Every structure is written in C-alpha cells, then in structure tokens.
Image 1 (cartoon, rainbow, N blue to C red):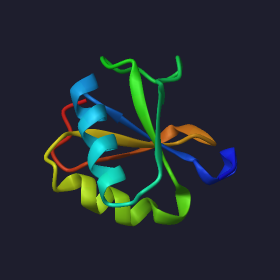
Image 2: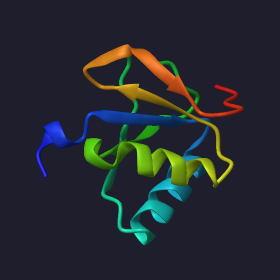
Image 3: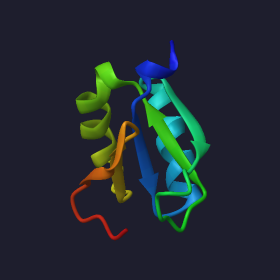
Image 4: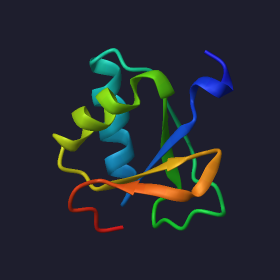
Length: 89
C-alpha cells in the first residue's frame, strides 16, 4: 500500500487505546499503522493510528464498538476532524 492509501489518522486519549485499536483491527484483517501524532494535532497520546482510506467507514464503525474515544483526522486537511461518539478528547 502507498502512503496515499493511508489518508486518515485516528487520535486516541492514550496509548492503550491505540494499541487496542491496532490489535483488534489487525484481527479483523484491516490494514493500519501506528504512527507518531503530528505536532499540529493536540493530543495527550503521542501515538495515532493510520487507517486505509478505502475501508475508513468500516474501520470506524468497528472501532466504535470498542468504546475507546477517538477523533478522525484527514491527513490532507488536519484542521477538519470527525469526533467519535462520546469522544472526550
């Protein structure tokens, strides 16, 4: 997969949320990458999860079942984000 396939960044409250999300996504066969949070995004956690664009909706819907708050950022437009339900970030 190219970098263009990973255009969405999920930012969680803490490292535990990222690790859990990455592990569960991989179990389901979703491709994702744990990466440092870009400086322009504020977060208490220094790690984020990049997800593949073509499975974005499916991955987000699945991750909502884990009950770990996160925000979804478009790497091409980091000021635009989508809150997960009940996100505390």
